[in-house]
Amino acid sequence: MCSRNVPAGATSFGALLATPATPAVDRAFAHVGPDTVAKLLFTSGSTGEPKGVINNHRMLCSNQQAIRQVWPFLTREPPIILDWLPWSHTFGSNHNFNMVLANGGTLYIDEGKPAPGLFDKSVANLREVAPTLYFNVPRGFDVLAWALEQDPALADHFFSRLKMLFYAAAALPQNLWERFEHLIQARGKNVAMVSAWGATETAPMVTTVHFRIDRAGVMGLPAPGCELLMVPSNGKLELRVRGPNVTPGYWKRPDLTREAFDEDGFYKIGDAGRFADPADPAKGIEFDGRLAEDFKLSSGTWVHVGVLRVKAVSALAPIAQDIVITGHDRDYAAFLVFPNLAACRALCPDLAADAPATAVLNHPAVRERVHAGMRALAQSGTGSSTYAARALLMAEPPSIDASEITDKGYINQRAVLKRRAALVESLYRNPADAEVVSI
Image 1 (cartoon, rainbow, N blue to C red):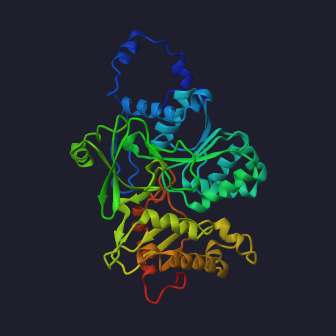
Image 2 (cartoon, rainbow, N blue to C red):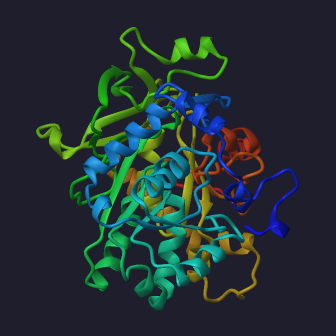
Image 3 (tube, rainbow, N blue to C red):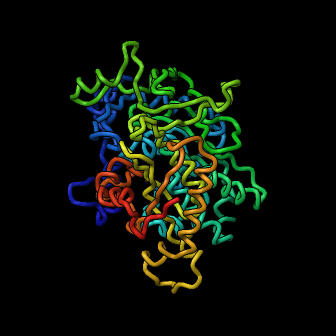
């Protein structure tokens, strides 16, 4: 970085390199050990207030050692990565950035992200850089799939030396998995699609896929050194974690630290899981939703938000880019849909290219596609908690400033439901508003 680009109060990397080391540096380094605090990372606040998570060197180093053990190819072929994920979060920093450092790889920083007005920058960067590993969140893969399908030259370049596609932070809809399978097969490539699971408190990897899987949803098996406890909870299996990658606690919050661990020292991560094949645990564990997001209908029936969301996004493809589930203490579940506007416009050739979003979302072809997806979901469901009776397509995209979408690119259900409470009410008004799709 040259001096003219250095923001006020910052120090350029060049200046650091030019600074002579003194004995004080060696003395400071000698005091760094496994339990030394490396940094504080704040949680996203998707299920509560953000908390400062202590990250020590033991956590960071054990995680990278585990990654190298399950992915030994990293020691033979240093990774080449183009990545937008922020270093203020555990996925972008502890997993991806540290992986490049630990294995002598190359990191290209992508100033774009899967957000309105910014993804074009990511596409431009992908025209220049062909990664060997590609990391993203499901929302990012959704907009990337659309770009690759529309531009075969971009897809050819993207897959030219790619070895692995990796998604995390939220569950990937099966229809999106299948779109990438088609893109890979069309080019005769051998690209693995994998995932992992963890949290800011686990630096981040707890489970990881290090074997071939044939569908979305599998988040692998415990990484070396990690213990995973599965505890029955409201019809699900709550996941708890113990290992060298787990935080010692929250910064200056001993109360929250005590609440976060059980009597045996397992961290209560707040997620649920299930075996992909109950008869063969070696086939991995599937994500079964966030316990804090689940709610009961007025009938007392639990709605498992994480599971329903993934099924709903697939059922409403290609219309739905993401979905927020409503229905707490209501008679039925309903959907607030963040639409893929480009996919919606493709269904409306009779509209002008610059037609407003509201006209596109209320077009009969779009509404019928949503209606058909909702009917299919209801027909395959096993009760009122497994489908939605109503849906509403929202013209306003999720707001980063309002914390509706996190820096990692996934939807903060709690923030959306709070900020768009009026839209939630419209889903349950009788008779239904004209914009609401009902079955």
